[in-house]
Image (cartoon, rainbow, N blue to C red):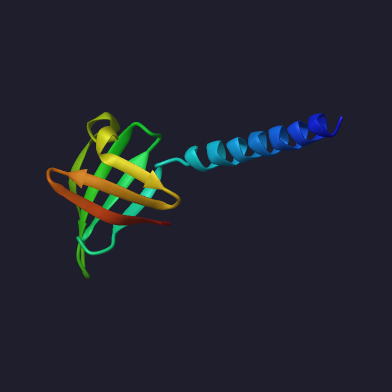
Amino acid sequence: MLKNIIIAILFTFLISSCKQQLKNTSSSVNGIWESVASGWILQIKDSSDYNFYDITSISCLPSRKGNLKELEKSLILKNDTLNLLKGVITYNPLRRIS
């Protein structure tokens, strides 16, 4: 009887930890992301399109836009930080802005 109770407790713990892990991985890349040191912004819309903007203290100019499938393999989302691999350079972190 005690063995069954211990198994039930362990099973419950296992299921709850898996649920938390799935919750953390379901975050969306949609939104506006600012490169901390590179002077550009990445905007992702509807998980399908993206826009890059070059920013300075006095301007925000469109730089490039396209289908998100072009960047899909280069984006890594962890918690609320987005990393982008462009060529041999990994731009990190990109932070979400409003």
